[in-house]
Image (cartoon, rainbow, N blue to C red; front, top):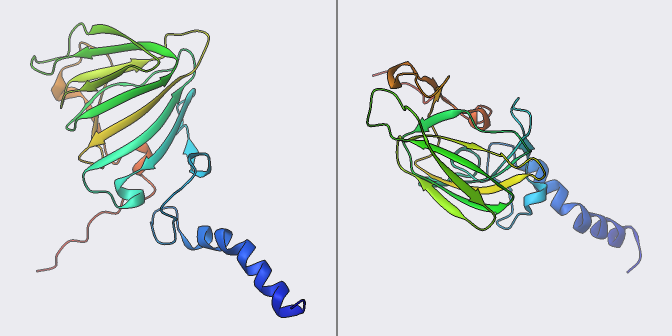
Length: 190
């Protein structure tokens, strides 16, 4: 079997993964393989220099209802904004080190945060609505973390500083990595 049919069949087998990727839109799980290579997933810095964000498994991208998983890499000196959200968050530090700043949401404003050293193979969690910031304070290497959140998609309240009242924090929803796929629910006409 060396005729045109065999060559067409051979080409189709080699192009199948490519065709499946074309069928899968950026915001749909249709056509996505169950097992994916993280290196093939879309990554972006969303206008924040020093950040690399990959949604490994998400609500809007993959249809998850209860959790979302991100892989985030922060270059030396880069950081998250000071923020809070109404979901639980768990971090697993894969490489590098840095500082977690954490303040309670029980006062009218965050106030002076507690500082916690984070390092490779460490883990920590952020309670619901506690104001926090993760900063790569290591001048020599990237800080890479696996991040798991509950209740996606995430609604983030951003603070200009630690003395900004909770009521003045600015809501960012959908968050940067959810903007492309977020669809406003249709209103019922009844």
